[in-house]
Image 1 (cartoon, rainbow, N blue to C red):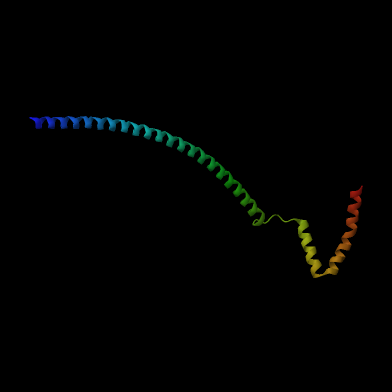
Image 2 (cartoon, rainbow, N blue to C red):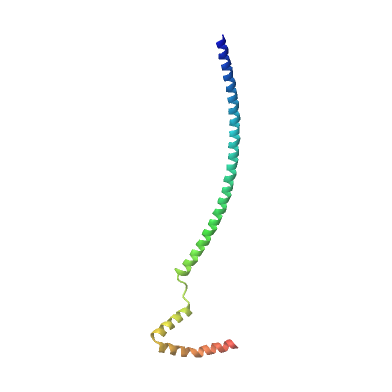
Amino acid sequence: MESMNWVEAIAFLASVASLILAVVAIISSKASEKEARENYEKTKDVLAEIDKRAAVIERTVSDSQQKLMETMTNIINETVIPKKADMGEEIGMQFMQQLFSNPQQAGDMMGAIEPLIKIAEAQKNK
């Protein structure tokens, strides 16, 4: 009979230990759940901030791309696409070619233009 009492005492102690472990497990799980919820909220806030910053970066990049495209278009228009012929530039080029190939004739051309230059200057001074 005495051995039964020891067995009953051990069983009782095991039951109490089981109850204590169950309570500790419940408390631990509630603490873990609270921590998980806090982490979830923090993660949502961080993701919202990332979303805002991504929108700002997207606008900045879009503006930069637009400016780069305008610059590239201007460069292409100025270098690749020939501009309309300027009569003054063409006459100047012809004069320079004449000056290199036949300096005497170029000097005679300047002598012929000299009276026109004087007339233009006289009208300008009036």
